[in-house]
Image: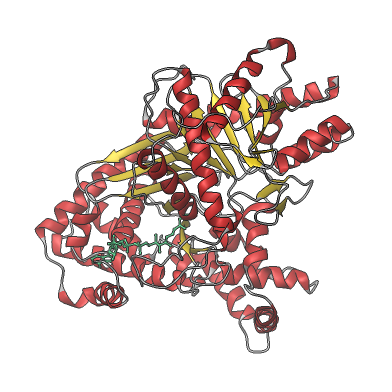
Length: 604
Ligand code: COA
């Protein structure tokens, strides 16, 4: 499967070399067999043989800064706040919703999720939900650590409120009584007042968390020499979540600018320092109505984040604020401002972090685009999987822009397995290449029926790869497992993993993910390589939403150009579907998938 996935993406000579390396690896009695045996032994003794390898490889070993490069964001609908107090009311209501949701997690009341779409109806592992509020990504010099506090721990009875780059502790339990929404609002108002007092203002320490992981770990080693800093860091580490009360950014409030503000805060001159990027759940409430969530990704996937934030959005609109009725439970102590001891050396570190964040801000090229010509209902009517169709459209757009296909990542949930996270659907299939060539070749004008056949081949190949990946038959996690276990038994890294093809095939120039929502909001994230695209899409019944990112620093990419090609391709694909009906012989795989999903209780 690996060879098939890369054959059409590399030069012929390189492919021949890789093929012989792979064949040697797979020889009877060879390295592959030995490693596979070790991996099977590991799988006998662990809940999930790939989880630790995957977590390290995907997140904890990665050294790039969290904003843009790693942390995804969920952008809420723009809020129309009447005044500043209105935004604080919203924040207090949101915090109340968070506490209600957290209570459901602690009491294990969350209903088990079941898969939808392909192979619908299978129960899914819920473990990721139990890591939403009790985790923290601690920076390390070589590898970060994901700290997991015990669920419902009494140490975790506070949230951190960020306001004007200051950090405040908002205790949620006072004299053994839980704060009511009115109390939370009172505390937020006090925090805003305290943050305005410029005499007590502390340096913007949150900036350090926006830096590269090694740089932040080095800075943290300097900070913790002082007990004041140590104490502040410990309190942040144990909080439930961070709530960032943002000043108006001064930017025009469109989808793209709101997404940018969520991903990087607009840099240190805007809201970029009013964040603590290590904390997995960070809610942003902007006075100008820009709201959302920024997440440290290592404890959970976007799908779990969607479930949580949709619950909160429904709570916000469905359950009335209890402000008017309840009065303060007791004399509330003033929230505590976190203090920092700084030195000229630390000031220098803050300045360096600010500059690096600024570079990231300048570099990000983002385009949030709503394709309104049709949505997933049209695609379903063609008896095609909407996800596979969109993936093929992305391949067509990439080919139009670059004249080639590249190694592509699409996240496939493997929550059917205990502690399952994701594997990769390699969407740049040979069938996709044949289709995009048929669509773009000017010299040999392909007939519509030829193009339609190729479209079906591409859709079926994509659908079959999806089914393989979500049922644990993907190749990326397996190869990762074989590579990592070779290190555990102190073997020299096998050639298959040092081969340039393997290295290139793991450079995902196109990194894509479907994050569908049922309420009005959308997810976004950055590219994973300097010359790449990050594409998060949200298929809706009558439209498709794309959050496209790339870096201005690369001469090979442009989010706007890609979006334009995508728009054109989606229209061409619709026209093609309208002209021709599918040939019977090619529909087997897709029809089977739908039949299975219907049989398993899908709501098709
Ligand atoms: N004809 C008609 N309808 C079809 C069809 C066909 N041939 N194939 C699928 N459909 C329907 C499905 O039944 C489903 O219907 P629904 O909207 O009523 O539920 C809908 O089309 C969507 O199915 P499909 O487009 O095939 O996608 P999917 O929902 O199975 O999703 C993945 C595919 C890969 C995105 C999904 O399995 C997955 O892994 N999601 C998680 C991704 C993730 O983790 N993202 C976050 C990363 S941080």
